[in-house]
Length: 123
Image (cartoon, rainbow, N blue to C red):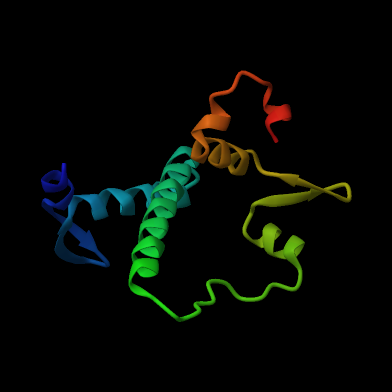
C-alpha cells in the first residue's frame, strides 16, 4: 500500500508540470472537489486531514518533552468562530449544528455510530 500511495504521478500545478506522490494528488483532487461543492469529497478530505493532524500531534508529543505548545488562538466569541468555520448556523435566534459535523463526529467514534439508538439520542 505504501508503494502505491508514494508512487509519483505527473500533474499540472499552476501551469507547471510536476511529479508528486499519488496520495498527495488524490488529496488535492478531494480538496478541489470539496471546494466545488461536493460535500462527500469535502468530508473525506477533512477525515484525512484529521488523521494526519492526529499523527503529527502524536509524533510531536513523542519528541517534545518539557515544553508547552499553544495549538489555537484564544477565541473570545466561540459562537462567532463556529459560524465562521461553518460548523453552526443561526436560525431564528438559535444555533444549529450542520449535519456534516454530526456525521463526522459519529464516524470518528465508531462505537457510538454503531449503536441502535436514534441519532437524536446519541447526541
